[in-house]
Length: 222
Length: 310
Image (cartoon, rainbow over all chains, first blue to last red; front, side):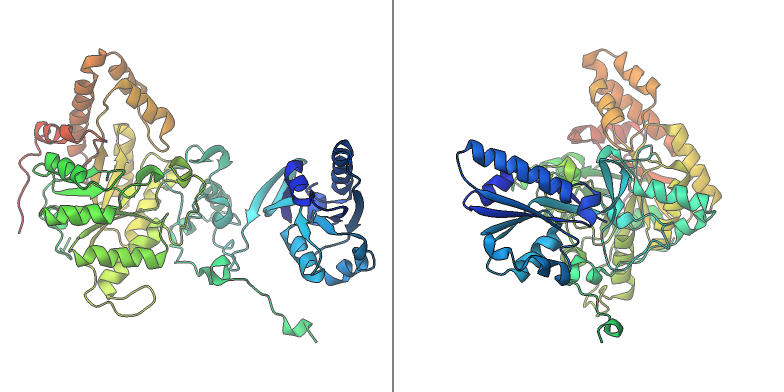
């Protein structure tokens, strides 16, 4: 899933301070799972903002809505009828949702309420870790199912570097060395010989390097 | 091994001499005299001088400019090149720039992470890794072609080196990793600083058992301690360095004013022992910001005078 983290409330206040009628818009997908932008967080943020503006002596309308998804036209249309009641929206969906809202409601300012962080997994409640950088050409088949692109600080395809110490990355002892994990996994799969296969230069044109990306499925577009 | 480039370092190794290299870090400014002075301190005692490439990710004068300066002094530079800061366009371009000045040695590295340096909020590139940089230089040299496939007019003629760290984890892949670098086309290796000689000897034995020592020239890396503080710092803070406790104790038991001397003594003793290790073809003496000690270490280790080759 897409993992996001809450923005500091001061930053959100700074974004919206010149507006009077504000919609806090949550998303029921990834950001709900990572407890950054779902219905519960919409409620918490809206309450905190109401209290802040009340203390400031300002009469600001703050409403709450949580959509099923903010990355889908269909769900964004559900609020078309009420959008004229607001002069700004704080979207606490991921960056995709914020932008899709901005494209659909062209003359309403849409502010981000979370920082979109990475594609990751829930280790346990309150701990999410990165697993994928969406490079567009998956190499997990050759690396024992552990991704060096997203999990090595230098995205080294023929690792580990000299900074791998007792299973940890040189930049932080709390971070696993991806290549130690790969080697452990290859060993478990009885495939350690595969370690010596040179990984060729990667085609990064399907990564960010190739510009904004598209997946086109004509078979689905009829 | 047949000589493939005009590199003096390659010729010395091919002739069967124990090679000696050292390294200089460029200044944090544009005063080239710093490099000239450092090089002058060591030039008669080494065969080639590495110029580091923004080591520990601290921004410095570029390795290429400093290498050109050494070349203009008639010395033999080893261009260190990390994959952290340039993509494949930048790397190939700088290789050609170096080749234009007849720089004949390159050391392919991935580079320390930028979080250690003066620009921790910067981006890193890592378009390719050190293993792939070895392949890239060999491709440019041997095929005379760019990575994109076009012909290079006057291809680079570079003796291709890389680093190896026998002490990093996991130990079990340290020899396979060397094999992988050899498969990628590396011709000489400069190792991480060796203090744990037993572990190094084991690594070399394992490399020998796999028949790797005939395929690559290994220069054993040594660094003299200036003080027990430095030894402790390296042991505890520098990733991938192993220092036996008894070596730290030996430094700690030495009065402070005698510690530099003791550090040099340990270094010379290490070289003497390493000379006996099968497959060691030379030494890479890294006297960090202590270049003036290199001549003494080389002389007292019986590695002076340096051989001359055509």
